[in-house]
Length: 111
Image (cartoon, rainbow, N blue to C red):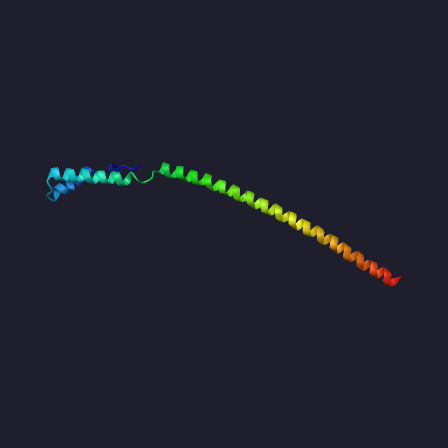
């Protein structure tokens, strides 16, 4: 986590307060309170490592979801291929029957 000490220079802040007439004891207390507040706020921010870990977890979850989606799509494609194959087979038989009937009528009409 971040440390308010990396962001907030308490010594510089105390000197700034003293420069405008704030007593040193009061400036130190105010600086300590502000630093404490900063630590409380910045400790809630995720670190780079936290973000990398979260990204890794999200990546694993996304890959899992994509795998499940791929399985579902493959299953649907397989069922669709089977249905189309069945319909094509039926259409071939129907066409063969029609052609046979037409040929039979042609043979009969010329005999």
